[in-house]
Length: 213
Image (tube, rainbow, N blue to C red; front, side):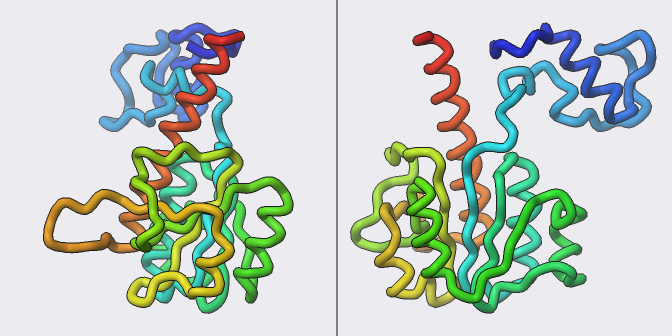
């Protein structure tokens, strides 16, 4: 439980009313809609004050606009701080991005950069750990990785992966366990796995810090 000044009931009621989906009786009453936003549930209480998480996402030469839109939607859902769209990676406004982002392209901060390598150097100078999500021989298992926040996770071209020059600039190479015959995931699917693992790790880091205070 975080130190936010609201108990579980107050938090749930506040969020529910913000979404306009709870009547004056409060939390636990019949909703006007069948779906309840996550932030209006008791399960969301540990995430109070966690948004944004210190995670930036760099997409370098990601060719599919649908994949870019999916990253926007996941970044919004997990509370990531910014998307960096580099090289040929598409950027809003694009209908294909909007189709999968579903409005998240308007809520997530983003920037476009021609030179992903220059951006990585600037982010490292600002204190970010730069982590390439790639199937290299140097990669560590995602679930064993102990990130040093803030973190920038880097994804490359759907077929060719990250360019060698950009890969060499990364501090860490991370890979997702693949137990079947296929050796990789769709880049947007991989992004969802990695982003939510970082959310889990960051939440745990904050919880441990509170315990040790």
